[in-house]
Length: 413
Image (tube, rainbow, N blue to C red; front, side):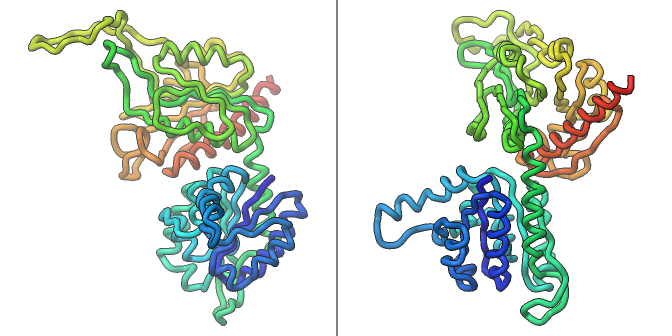
């Protein structure tokens, strides 16, 4: 595993040297990135000697113009080459910049480009730790799915006694291992995911579609790949880049999506139908653009293929997850779809208005979601509002639990 160790500017930075040593003892390659403040407390040479790799400390190199040009995009390369980001100490300033997306040095810019799991170990004065602003920033970062290693109580460098002391390097290293272990729990699995809308042509320039952005399906694909799965993502038209390590197949219509799903079904052990497939299409599409007139236009629409229902009939021992985008009666409709389509789980979410009591819109074309998981075992599992990536990981956590439960039930019969 390749790990980035970010070192912030605090007296606890000296403990990060021990953390680097522990991570290397666990078999990881460690790339240290230091803030300017971090370099005031510990010299980069210390980390270079421990890791055998150059320490990155500035967003731009000075002197050689060619070196400056390459350093300008180095944060992208580091983000793509490494599997996990751990920041210790994570100062109050770093937490605030991470939470609000500010990027004015290498570490904060790397953070925005990084798509893997993140572990943050805060360290600061007790009053700074307890301040409402810091706690609000921590809540934002937790909702993104980041693991927070809370600081310990004790005497601080400022003389105060209370919470704020950096967690012991052994605790932070254990949190990194736990995150790695959880994120590789799909090793050897093949996951088939559909995402985005479909577009059903009305003529050569018009189509029927919906508001789906594909963000939830892409977050699921990204999470599955990060957890070790082989992922095939079949996507309708969206404005999103392909997640790293994922096989992306682009389609336009429901028929094309159906054909690609069954062409790639055989190796899949988990199928997640997150796409918002159009329910109707024009049976006979005219070859030329329909001209506007003053007369009313009526269209005869036929149902599109019901991909989820067909999968429910043909899934065999695969685990099938459907999505239910509803505007009302979420619990009842999720359970109805679970039974009608022979799913093992249905992810229900309210769209077109406020999510389940949060007061803010979730679902289509947003970066956050709030869902209800209806299970084959009869359970209903609410997942609180969080980033779609964090929700994706919660869904996979519950998929793995569900599979164990269904396996146990099967063996009891």
